[in-house]
Length: 156
Image (tube, rainbow, N blue to C red; front, side, top):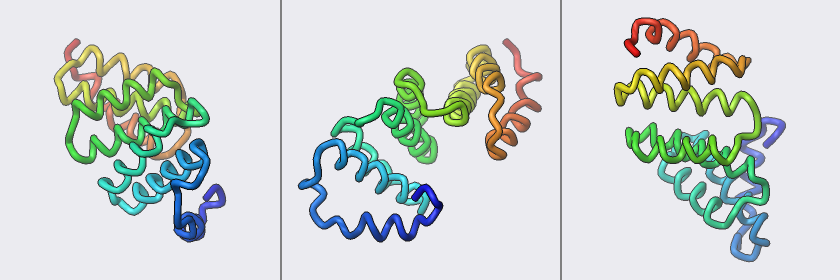
């Protein structure tokens, strides 16, 4: 999976016939990886189901828990469930995220939620936090540039 061979990773995961026999931390990672693959395939319902299973089992690493919560927030955003998305993303930020890129993505998502809710001061605050992390991922940098066009015209 780290090498980018998602089909190979999926084949390996599919060879596990009885995930309930895995040790609890490994089972948690198993469901998280299944959720990641479902996200990649745009299967948001499956991704949400697997991610929740992984979180319910408890994550072996705390930053992995934050990343899973962030992904659940993204799934909720795809479903236009802003309240649930905000809850997941806020708890992901609280739990901690593995790197600055994920943290910037979380702050940008919170910024867009706040803009939708017309809470402009909070939106600007989240935008400043995201920009201060100086992310390098092209999608996040592009998102910052897009939001920057609108954020200067917002009241608050």
